[in-house]
Length: 301
Image (cartoon, rainbow, N blue to C red; front, side):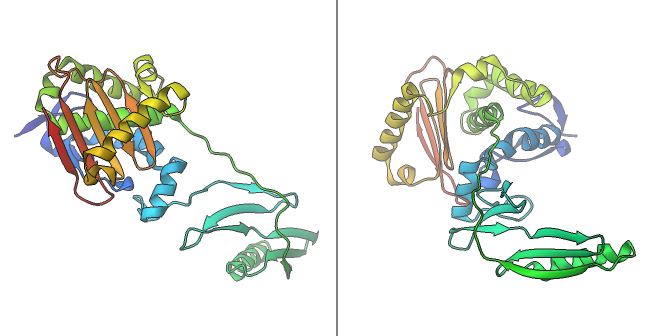
């Protein structure tokens, strides 16, 4: 009976307990797959790591642009939360086929008395009949007859806003996991290194506890602070001179001089001190990929 070692928990298990893992999440159009992550770790990383990157607002914009659906088969809305106007109506901001924003207002319910309800609908609400029928069924079940009057609401909401909660710690860990699997796939020496042992242990520790890890917080940077933006700019400038396949790719993973640069969809990260390849300063590995297309490998060792 054939056994394998998981590159996350490092446990040796029967090969039947392993499943396909996309290095770049398939919900972002990733196509590179590995078969060395056990099902348990794969499921945990999907919930605790992948989701936070694929559902991040910048990548929801990316998925809308390239029409990439998730595991539910649906393409996410760019703005998924809602707010309420001064009249108590729920306001949702959706996009049409051309990615133009449109406001959707929920009906406003006004109870005249126990047996009479007036509902005010936005002009052209195509869910009006279904909503009204639902209220009539509920009223009937309670032995009441509710009269529903329909009145068009033409004025726009007075104001609206939305909040987006971002788990930066989970997003950092997701980039870290992508870098780990990337080097496991493309560099055999990495698996025999002390860095591999450290990195796999940090990922496993996070999916068990979901707590901040100092090493991760100190060594992963986003292009937010001015001092970090210059580094990201220099790396992006380098890509423009390497080749068309890299310059025009949506996803790029770039290893050089112990660091890993990642551009995954509309998000960027830089991981310092990730892997010291045999004390070599010249090793470079680059993978570039467009959504749902085959990845292109550039290797300079």
